[in-house]
Image 1 (cartoon, rainbow, N blue to C red):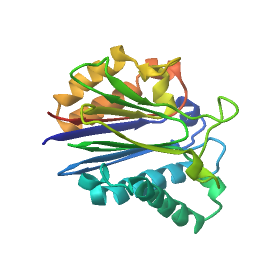
Image 2: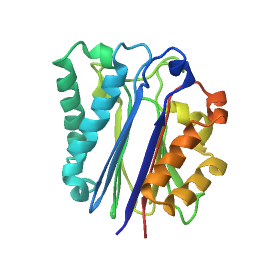
Image 3: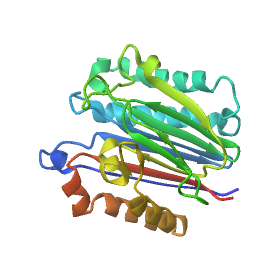
Image 4: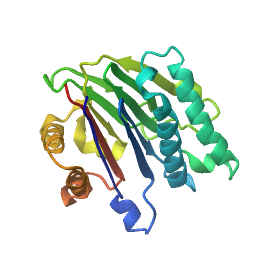
Length: 243
């Protein structure tokens, strides 16, 4: 069973022009029996959100990678995701105020038997049947009372907004993205993949060596046309399981 994964994160021009750090982060952990990927988007209003995003992505991906093969069918899967998030919260709360580290979370655990999906806040996740691109799953962004607000893992009621579900094994290709990348990689009302963008990326990454694939994906996110669409940070992660 062959698993592939590629991710890239591009700093938005709104941050580079102000000499501010990228507030997106991603983490991918590949194992023999599958892959775990997380994409996190730090809140622009939080003082250390880039640290929150990096810590959350790393802690959750590393923690869940310990049980990749059995996680999809494990009745305690949601509890394990919650425990992994809590580890990140505990680590950051020992270093400062949690409100300084606001970030959202998109994540999947891809295995031969199906995929565990977990999502907190905004960002977007697509699971695609690569044999029929009209067959796809969506985990949509969750916004607050206003479209520009969302939910973070640092908030007291974060568990109420954590969504966890299992997807069938037919969905072998996955795209996880921050809202910056979603502005050109997806269509909304309803949310659906932007096939003219994602399908060529999938076809290229599937047949390209890792280093070259990472460079190409980063180059796409850093393309001036992408920056003209949005000045926000842009993160895109692709996972694929061969049949």
